[in-house]
Image 1 (cartoon, helix red, strand yellow):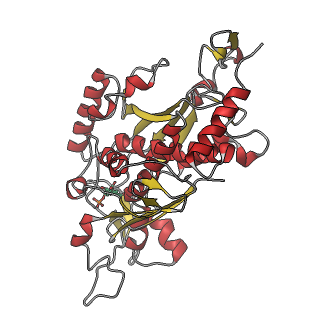
Image 2 (tube, protein in one colour; image 1 turned 90 degrees about the vertical axis):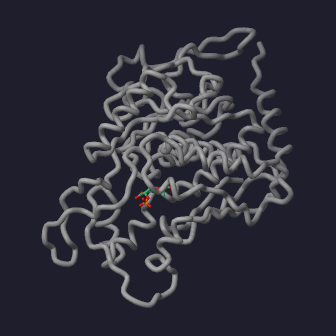
Length: 387
Ligand code: EPS
């Protein structure tokens, strides 16, 4: 049993499509479960003009009946309202008249390698699909995975650690309650002072025609020990999470737990010692490993960090080459966002939920959600602390 999904859709085409396969039957959900996360993905200080046009809604066309999953693939449509302004340029079928091609590949985007690889002359054939607009479809699938995980007692949350040069203070003691108001921060940062400084940094970057990247963190609470496996390379959950995070547009780094910060430490300070008590059973006082040892969950919170590069579409474009004339030219100047780290954290939540959801389907199986819950309960009973 696995949980897997695929998406289709171009940024300014008619819309995005997602198919999520492998949810158990009988899972109760509402349209708000999907639309809430779609709306959260659209937030964040630093978004550009496009978000004033879009107001994303998930239209479910398969796999759910009267608010419950059927166990069949769930199909979701997320329309592009902006398509109304692109109907000629992005029409699936030939249109009358000339449609102007884009010949100015942007450094940092898929543009140049994409036209070389597929043999296109029009960069738009690449940039439309490479665009992070596609993440709306991922978030819709992730919202369904979260509903499944909640039934297993797992909550996936996120926050922003840094934007540009502004870093929020690090906190090891976070609980789900600490995330209650994170969406109230315009940059989805838990620290009010850092939040204000991040907003100011984005504003000054925008004035300077610049963009900013940053680092976010996803935490999954309530994860049972033993998801994933050490027995084969591709079963390791840390590897699967890293792939999921790195597959998000504009990601350049991923860390599990303390990640790169562990590398310079001596071994005695880099691990989480094991304790046992009658009340708590096995437990740790630290979580430097981010809830993963040997490619398996430990029972501590999962902690996954992602590093996002500054968006490469700039209002003051970088140097490039006209692909028709081969003359030096400025890269394509398109409407863009100046910072999307807060939105990327919501996308990363979705990707982590989909990977953890897949690992739960693998371990607990079940055709109906009650079967999966019963399998989890039986497993937790088996590993319960006993002398
Ligand atoms: C994107 C460029 C911008 C973003 C877009 C991703 O779109 P546009 O070119 O239409 O201004 O707003 O993101 C979304 C539309 C979205 O929903 O997140 C890009 O080039 O990746």
